[in-house]
Image 1 (cartoon, rainbow, N blue to C red):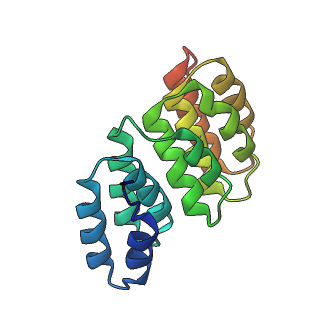
Image 2 (cartoon, rainbow, N blue to C red):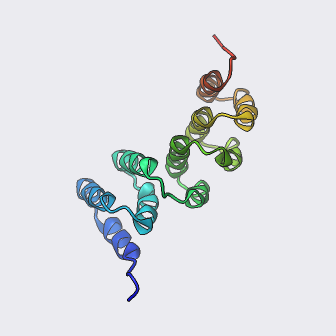
Length: 162
């Protein structure tokens, strides 16, 4: 007998729950189950409007070995902006050099928070490709993006900006 995948049913329950504390309780209970379908549900719920819930999900998925990075890469193009920023933070925890090519598409993102988080993530990942993208972000018109890119570059190189 094949195992059932309850991901759609669980997602529907989470999305139908209007109270954020109840949603967080459901998500925390779900996090105690460590298999692929729960990774998928947690990643889908990263679109939750509650920042505390997103922070919990990022932390939980960040410590799991079995998260499919391709699912995260696909979410990088998903609005709203906070889904992109959350996925970038998760990639920063994972520190996979392969992620840099997906992050590169976001350095022209209209939302400054996404560009700031992209800079921070590149600083976590490091490598030559990250340095190239950070050099571009240092030229950003937004002061906060520039500062984040400078801090990230200092983290991954011997350059100092102050």
